Length: 369
Image 1: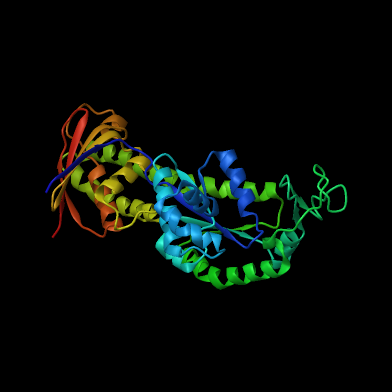
Image 2: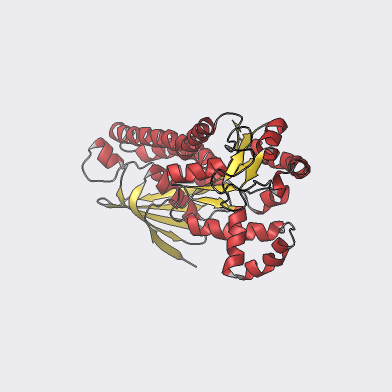
């Protein structure tokens, strides 16, 4: 069976960044500020569950009585709802912020995210932030008896009625919430720490300082590996042009050997950015095109043991870099892809180059069986 599709580079690999932390660590405040400041989509799990109920969806009907009883919605249902929302947003987003997930080790298994940012605060800070918080029952204005006190003793500045303490902010409830946090958090931390995907931010500082620290972290996640990969790739392209000029008869073999090694290094970095062996060939090519701006358009045809790639308007071709006349030339793209497939999918391919001069090149890779 032959699969064929034409695609243009796009950002299909949106990075999912989840926020965890103790109650009162500032997750809601920080993520909402970042959403507005950076124009990044934000999924707040609690809001998402209420939205499903309000819409009357099938999932909403399942969870409505659970929420009404004040019980915890099953991990499987929460994961399904979050996955659905991510699927809607990832087509147009490079980064998606996730607040309120994962809360349990089971949730972390059901839906894997790319990075986890933990806002770290002490228990003492949690108790001070939450137990001293007060709300106006009428206008819903929020006060803090120490940091944002009302002008008159526990009276709303606007409504002049007595402020109340939310149930979630009462000392016994805060103790229970902290206990639950400690019971669930360590396996989640360990899962992401083991692959260098857990980032801890000191949330004892001011809101402005915490937002700034998280913003820098997001910028690093978005572009940290991309510059390195582009640099490696372009150096290889220039090297290919030079090898082609010096050793015209054996240039392709030399370039293949070098580019396969480079492809494996890029594959390692792509895995850090979310690539895995369960991805389809199409997804890997899309990711390569997005990260390296490979070409304006490419066409992929898959057979059982063969991949045929046609590249149109290649943006990093040795013919362009070296200024050579239009002719067959040593191309590193096939070798890079072989290296990436070896590293990401753990599959071996051999290059069978058939480069067509002009605006389109054709590369055939055969799977070694």
